[in-house]
Amino acid sequence: MPFENFKAIIDFAIEKEKQAVVFYEQLSEEESMSGVKEMFKDFAEDERKHQTYLENLEKGNVDKNLANYSLEWIPDLKRSDYVVEMEYKRGMVYGDILKIAMKREEMALKLYNELLKKAETKESEKLLKILCQEEAKHKLVFETMYDDYMASMGD
Image 1 (cartoon, rainbow, N blue to C red):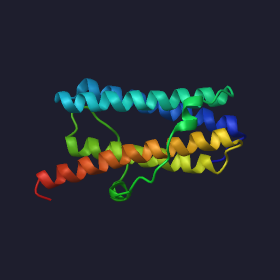
Image 2: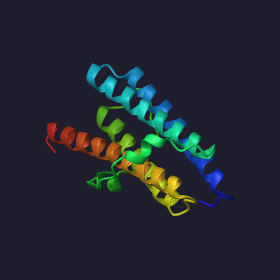
Image 3: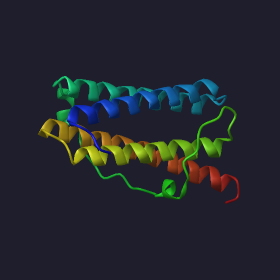
């Protein structure tokens, strides 16, 4: 990903977060199971927070609450490594929705790991590490849900 400067990188990441918000909001509106509907709403809200963090970083205002954020290792089930990218279509089966979501989170995690290499300040480095962790958590949730779904289907 060739970018002119760090601002261009952050602008790109902000756009990706906006797209994630729209994706999860759309899923929450179309989902009929209330628990899953709420989960997608929560993911949309998480992605909205990520967008705000990045917008603040771009303005030079890193959220001071992030200084106390505890980084931890998030396991990688690597399920998404074996999933091809697909485009969401209304009415898709649940398993395919999970595949799309886990792949999207994998790509977000890769993006933030790449951006981390270009961090210009300690604050931006910390924020990007936090975003890596947040996306890794999301990926783990979807990979675990996919494993459970596949087990329920006899796989």
